[in-house]
Image (cartoon, rainbow, N blue to C red; front, side):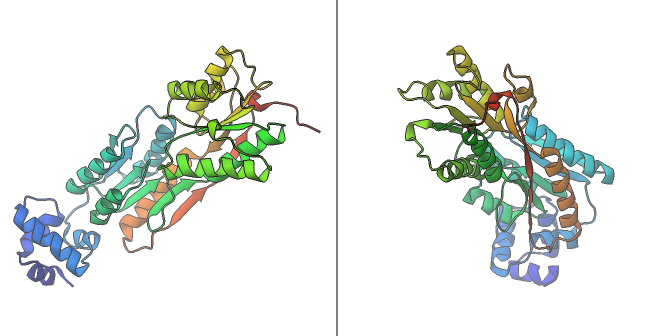
Length: 332
């Protein structure tokens, strides 16, 4: 189907179709007719945009959870290192870990010309799917493993399982977990499942009071550790979803007179600077954030050149860095 055929089905002129796919001015009535025709015919927005587009912008939209995030900064560095070689500039938008703002940002880039979008997503909802299906340029998701979409993700399950097993192998029998929103399929759900799998394989029973859900910051880690340690029975190890949460938990433990790792071991995911400079350096899983960014950029370039490529998922590995927070003699 060419643009003339599509214009007839939509009941508008070819120029109106061209303006639609080039983000030009168009009345709401004509825009609605074109969008209804797209749904009816399956006419691909990306292919159509490419056929009527007269130029590329060399602009890529990047949607970040927050600028202060070390992991997001490393991902962005990786993205820039690749795209700058091909003459692309980045347009950065931050969402403050608010998925509604993620959707607003996708809409922003849908209405304003960019050659592609890289989204560091936190959660993935039906609204995300609706907007992504309307996008006229390729979108790469970073940090989430979602079938049917181009994704670069991490082995969050494996990292959390390995860290938990490390502490259990050193004699811990009362494990606790401080995680994040389970609607976050990576940092929330996958890391919790990895923790629970390690506990189950060790033949231990997880106490409900030893599960806490925190925000992505030190203060929240501190408060959740305070709550964990307010019970009569107390954990002897804590797996934290992120290094910043672990740093907060460690601060409360030390203020409470608990020795790390003698009284309680702590491990987390991220290999951030805060984990290295903590009073007791934190055992962690190194995720390849910069590599994730560079691989996402390469995936985007491929999708720009060949929009019909089948979506794929690239999962990166991890490695464990053991530091003093778990340096406890193994039981014999």
